[in-house]
Image 1 (cartoon, rainbow, N blue to C red):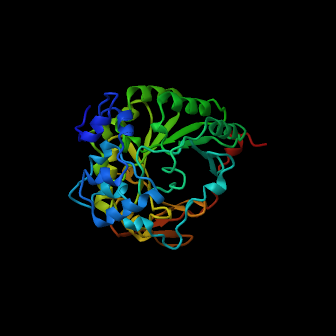
Image 2: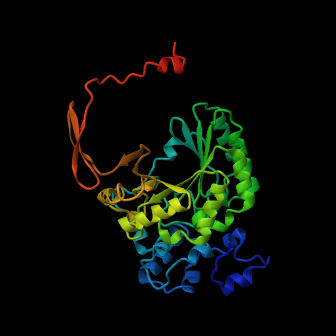
Image 3: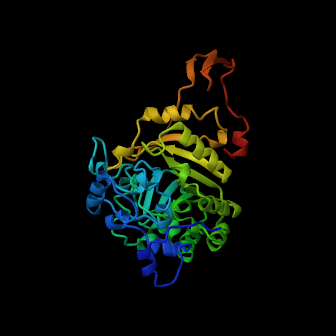
Length: 389
């Protein structure tokens, strides 16, 4: 499958290897990174000019030509544009904003490891991405000096997983692991899979959204050797679900990889129920299960993109009962300071007592659910099944 991409004379002139724009390596080499490059491609607003002038001292800008081609140059409110071009409001820090909003550094027993939950860890495979999102919650680590995490650091991180038998689930993230070469990514995945107590491997990536040509047959053939392996990607708006992005998701699904999506609720980008409904129902058509809808993290410089908690709850109320349950994710706040994820949502419980609960359905109608008289819910066979002594 091919997609028509804009050809920029400056890009073509620098393409000394002769690779074309369908190559993922070409896309990474020709990322758009400066105010001058962006201004040559679309008219900037004063707000965007101010943001781009200040960006070098705060957080890097980089956009693949593919993803840039999705921008509506005539509308500053374009949801793709708002995710990649900084604005002056990125310089504003609200009370409560944090450099490390999820307290990851306080849960890092080894370089490249974040161990927040008892049975799972995040393995930071690298510190670079295909693009740099304005809402990034890990901007203290990524998009700065694109110096790769060393092999020694990765070896020590994997050694930590190996000597910690409580860990059964490893999320490989970054940065974006799928920007690594297939061989290098396989070294990491294979090393994790070789640890006997690791049952599940997950990869967090935005590549299907911003660099879908990276998802090629070689990559899929490699990944399918390491099942059970899951991928969570990060679509924020249905505008991102191009034919090429859909094909990337379907290719991964055909390799037997279950796909989930983690959307961040962003003010002015996707903060309406009809946009979220469209996104989640279209993701299902690509065999991608909406997994999380995140309230924005309190990362410094991102307050202009965060919505109120009430906005997220109102959107969820307009999803449940109105679209397939498969398309309804968990709305969560990843709490500041590393306290973990907390699920939130509409309150469907009107009243409760020992005899009945009164519930409100998605249409606003009330219904009683009778409580059983017997409250003991012990499973008598548990001791046999689990071999309790």
